Amino acid sequence: MDVNKYMLFVKAAETGNLSKAAAQLSYSQTAASHMISSMEEELGIKLLYRGRNGVSLTEEGERIYSAAKELTEKEEIIRQLAGEENIQHGKIRIGVITSVAVRWMPQIIIEFRKKYPQVDVFLNDAINYEIMKDWFSKDVIDCAISAESNKKENETPLVKDPYYVILPKDHPLSDCETITLTHLKGETFIIPSEGTSYSVGKMLRQAKGNLMEHSGFLSDQAAISMVCGGCGISILPKLVLDSYGSGGYVRKALDPEVYRIIYFIVPSGKTLRPTVRIFSSFAREWVKENAENVIIN
Image (cartoon, rainbow, N blue to C red; front, side, top):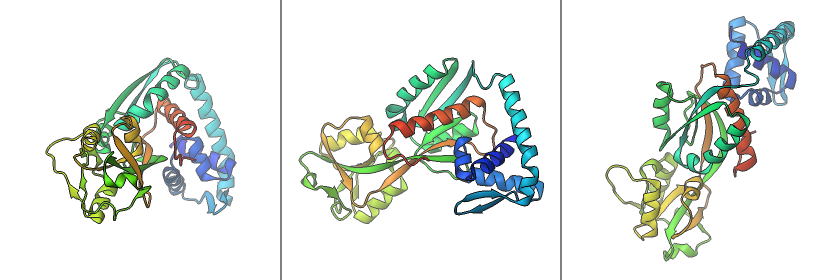
């Protein structure tokens, strides 16, 4: 028996909304839906009616609600007795993409340590989510903040991070208000190794630009420096650009807007340690209060 499923069921019944229940318990909407479906399959009954205005208990759901609530209340008492409610020690291992490490993590870690001084925080940064997937499989990290989507994991979208075109200051397009794909035709693109995402690749093909070849690894910072030196133009997300300052180049918005999504990610099908659940809630609240283009509920 997975008590977490019962906790989610009770919370959904109380709030009348599965999305709200999922957010309160640090699950994505997709993960919450799977958990309820799994619980219904295990019990052989339908627990919730789902509609546009939320969820409500079925007749079978009403029959087990009181017992499920009693079970979750006992679970909470056990956790309190075990000291989970007032964490005195523990650890959290976080994987983040480099731009998040630069822009968000210093303040997140400082504020988290103030609230939970006995929790040890271990930070690992990577250029892309492929590395973090390997870290998850090898149990190197407990959670991640990344711009990549991997439907096998439990993801919560945090913010939209728009892409910008960056140009040398004397470039003819620097006078444009916004940049369209038509403007980019024939231009030389400098794309960092970790920046060859689907969105950027699609723009390159549509714009029929010329990709400046490079062998091996090219960092975001190196790509920005090459743009400043007049070697070409680049397309990079706002969070990346904000990480390295704005001197030496001109930043222009794309028309229409193109963006990536930054997610908070925990592994699916794994019981989360108390420190992971607490950090998940803390980080998402921090993003709501401090980040731009927030999309988290």
